[in-house]
View 1 (cartoon, helix red, strand yellow):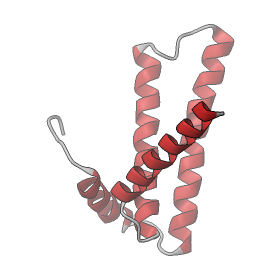
View 2 (cartoon, rainbow, N blue to C red; view 1 turned 180 degrees about the vertical axis):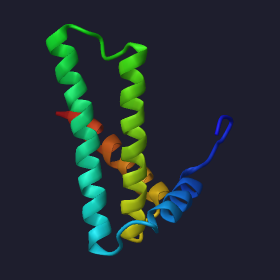
View 3 (cartoon, rainbow, N blue to C red; view 1 turned 90 degrees about the horizontal axis):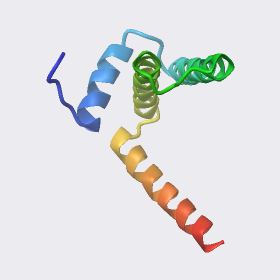
View 4 (cartoon, rainbow, N blue to C red; view 1 turned 135 degrees about the horizontal axis):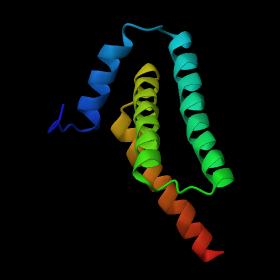
Length: 109
């Protein structure tokens, strides 16, 4: 898949097609939530192990493992957005706006 590019809309469409083979309805939402928790837990586990062993999270091996989990998380976010009848692009834009507002509020404090 080298050289493949896609935007959020294309990613969400491809994710939905793959997710159609999994559960639907509320079960799909639960599946996505559990997948997000699992992947974030794996990243946290890497952090914990690296901290304990004095290793860098930024080396190629750990970076590749984290990147893989980010991919799973992005996929679950996409499927979850679709299950909630939301466009992933809109979710991303809304979040950037929220973060901008949060950081501006923090700077004013």
